[in-house]
Image 1: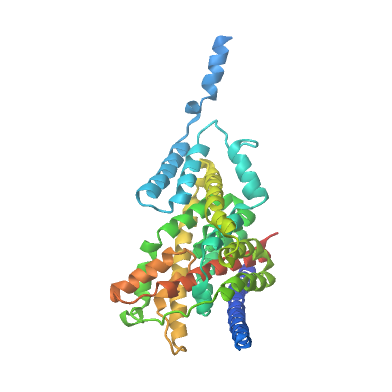
Image 2: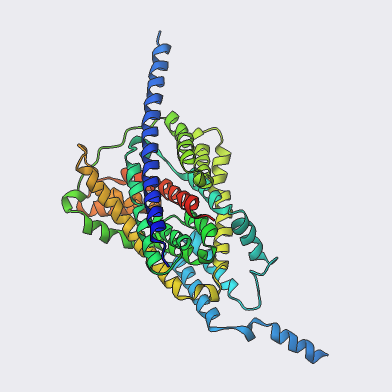
Length: 49
Length: 374
């Protein structure tokens, strides 16, 4: 007997979860890259005489 | 007395207990070895797997009996601790360059889209009579990631380990044959000739920070994926930090080579004739192929969909690289692009979804474990 309701739940939560996780990771990487760039620029400016 | 001993020795010989199933499995094992050697189909795995199949099907040798050598390998490294796939991921992480993902993070979406084939096949497996955990382990073949397939199957459906692992590695080897027709079918010539901008240079700080950021985000969201993602990223940190060259070299060479030997032999050892030669094995290979095809198609289709909204278009061929067969899938995308335009270089752009697919498949496996592990 196929548990269709459970299967649909696994599909939605599973695929949705993978998509959501990688979207959040994408946002995290964008923010991280911007922060690295910002601090590297600040550091370079502070080093200039 | 002597005649009794001779009788005993004769009865203990494997020759007197050979079955048709043993012979068939020897043929399958030898076929895998021949494909690996002659055609270079994933030789690092298919040779030990093939030999494991041959040796475990020798009657009376009982190598998978408790206490015997293959049983020890399998029981402790996979059945009890499930340690080999995370160690493989450590080595793979040490060999992976995440620059294409860091430079163009939206390719993570293509890696996620390619997991759609996993879930389509999950449904298909249920229709064919598999249980929910079994369907998950068959679906994950679509991620084209051998270690993740083994990691998931050994926990959810260890009785299917041999079939799913061989299917996963076989289809990974067949990427150059399976993917191009699907890519050509779903794209126009104009789309295949889209040229993409060269990726920006990624700084050392970003490359060092990425494994930490990715580990924290993915493992906090999906803790069950931590064994795979954590090992993947620590290997990458060894590579990128530049101060542990010895550890990086060991992870890329000695460690992964040793683990590959044990893993291959263990997988082969799970395929005695009475387990492998069943109707459901054929279903697994058929469904694995479906998973792979849908994963390829969904990556391409998402790339085409994204192009509706992007000013700088993506060549949809790189969407097919969202399956985790690194770097083969990227090379296939490049080859198909070259067919239309010999000056269109998309290999590095294709590496983005390719490595993102590895993260996506590990995340999918983690979610299956969270939802289906008893």
